[in-house]
Structure formats: structure tokens, C-alpha cells
Amino acid sequence: MPFDIARTRAAYPALTEGFAHFDGAGGTQTPQSVVDAVADAMRAALGNRSTAFAPGRRSLELVAAARTAVADLLGATAQGVVLGPSATALTYTLARALGATWRPGDDVVVSRLDHDANVRPWVQAAEAAGATVRWAEFDPATGELPAGQYAELVGERTRLVAVTAGSNAIGTVPDVATIAKIAHAAGALVCVDGVHSVPHGPTDLASLGADFLVTSAYKWSGPHLAAMVADPARWEPLRPAKLLPSSDAVPDRFEAGTPSFPLLAGVAAAVDHLAGLDPTATGDRRQRVRAGLAAAQAYEESLFDRLLAGLAAHPAVTVYGAAARRCPTVSFRLAGWSPAGLAAALGEAGLCLSSGDYYAYEYFRTMGLRDSGGAVRASVYHYNTADEVDRLLAELDRLARRRETMAG
Ligand SMILES: Cc1ncc(COP(=O)(O)O)c(C=O)c1O
Image (cartoon, rainbow, N blue to C red; front, side, top):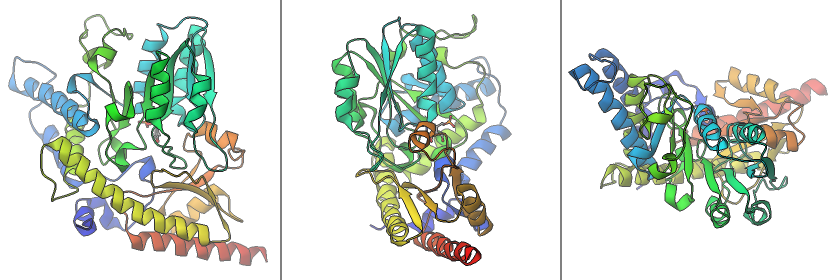
């Protein structure tokens, strides 16, 4: 059955404003069901977590429901879902806790394809422990992150390999399962950044081979919250900095302070939204979320092919990256335009695209593009349309000629 784009778009009230959102990689729009879940939780009597009174029990239930929903999304166990304000904050929490177990002479492996949120926390934790940092390099021509290099990078003192499941700059989907096998054979742990990949297809913690996997709900129609998931046994030996009276249990031990209970209601509602993307899907929520994301993935890929073909056909456009497996995300430049100037001109036409390095710091630095403004990024999400893609391509063509006219 074809993806029902009219039904999908109708779920998002913000789309009536008419913008074309090619900035899902920076954050998606919010379905009405998520807005309602957050508002309902705020409207209801709500207390801080307590078993003593009903409003306190509601907060306990909201936390538990968010953990179960994220577990369904990723194929994880609810007891291993640590919730937090952002992927960056959660990765720092994990890096500090793991880093406290490292010794001088240990090493960690990070990649130059990753968002800085899965690089700098590890680099800084390694520095604090006197451990060595090893770098996995991407191929500048294709944007691939060859898995074979990890056999050289990982050794018997490697404690951790941090790698992305999808580049937020150029979409590359590395062979994480092979990288994880190499890491595990040497006894190292694997932390996978799923922030960019999770919204674009079914994800399974075990098939990735991830010991830790992080995702941010605001990239998949949810509120600005995130989760780091692992087998509870992986969390058990770790001792994060925490307050004395706060819970010492897993996963609560890793969650500092009082969470936003209403936004957690939004996290669960966002997973339900993803589980409803294929209305023909049956089974439990895990099965339906996989089906929903698989349907969205096929749809997004068809739009992305159209976008890539249009960009490739334009003589004034330079596209970065050409990985075989990729999320529907592309960075490019238009001759005669700075990335920031181009994004602003597109913005005037109601086309929302990010420019700069989007914190894919090492990628743009290695490519020699960072100091001159990075690139412009178009990222396709399940509410985009073929008409929007055509609108973007037509506007790029118009802007290419406008600048050429001005120059000539
Ligand atoms: C691939 C990737 N990793 C990590 C992050 C950081 O996520 P957060 O904003 O939740 O810290 C982002 C945000 O854009 C991202 O795209």
C-alpha cells in the first residue's frame, strides 16, 4: 500500500503554516497527538513521584510509559532506558561514568564522521583518564566510513568505540554491526549515536551490536528529550556522580534531578505516532513501530532520490557524500552563494534548511569546508512531499541564475 501522505500530514498542525521543512535533522514538527498528550498531562493533577497519592503515581506512570515506549522503538528493555534532556547530556553522563574506569594506556576510538556529541565527551573523558584517542577516518570522496579500518584501530587496550548509525551531515549509514563485532572481539564497548538514524527506519539495539544507543525524541516528532538505552546489566557496574538521597537503582541512578513529566507523556505519544504510520500494521507496538518506520523509510527514500537527482543534474550545485547506504540527508553548496546566505534566501521562500556544520565538526573541518561556512543541509522526513522537493529544486535554480545575473 502506498504511504498515505495526506493522512500523515494531517497529523501535524504546524504544516498548515505552509513552510517546507527540510530541517528534520535539526528537529521535526509535532503531531497533534503529542501536543495533546503533553497538554493533558499538564492539565491533570500531577505531583512529584510518589506512591502515596494519585497525582504522584501519575508521574511514576509517565516515566514508566516513556521508558516502555523508547524500549519498543529500539528493541530494548524498559529497565535499561535512561531518560534525559538531550543526547549530548546523556553521552556526557555515560562518558564520565565509563571514563572513571579507564586507566592511562587505555584507548578509545571515535570517528570523524560523527556529530560532536559522540566525539567530544569521549575525547574529554579520555584526556581526564590519561587514555589515548584513536580516530576512524571517512573517505572524503564518498563519505563512507570503512569498517575495515577498525581492525587496525581497535586493540586489546581499547575500552570504547563510539560511532554513528547515521551521519547528520551527509546521511552515511556505516556498517555498525561489523564495527561492533570488531570492538567486541577485543573486549571493547560500543556506543552508537542513533540520533540521526532512528527517525528514518526500524532500529534494533541487538542487530546493531550496540552496548549503548542514544536517540533524541525531537528528531522523531517528540518533545526535546532524549534517551540512552542499554541492557540493564551494562549500566549496573557504572557509578555516575549523583546526589546522596536520589535513587541508586538502574536506570534512575543516571537521571539527575526531576524530569519533565508532561514532556515524557509526549515521548510515549510520539512513539505511538510512529507506530501508526502504517495503518495496516498489526501486532504489538514494537511490531507496528517497525512497520510504520519501514513504510516511512520507503517513502522518504523515493523523495530523497528525486532530490538527489535534481541536485546532481544542476551544474551550479556541489553535493557532499555519496554513501551506498544513507539516511535521506544531503549537504550541498550552490556556486556564488555562501551557505548562510543561501539558507537565508531559501528561508525567504518558505524553505527551511540549516546551514553551517550542524556540529558535524570533524567532518567539515576534515573536508576543509568549515572555515568557509560549511554547507546547506536538506533532510527529508515522513511529512515532506514531492511537490516540496520540486519547490526546493526550482528555488535553487532561480537563485543560481539570480546570482549569476548579478555577477555578470
Ligand atoms: C547525529 C546527532 N547526534 C547528536 C545530536 C545531539 O542531540 P541533542 O541535541 O539531543 O544533544 C544531534 C543533534 O542534532 C545529531 O544530529
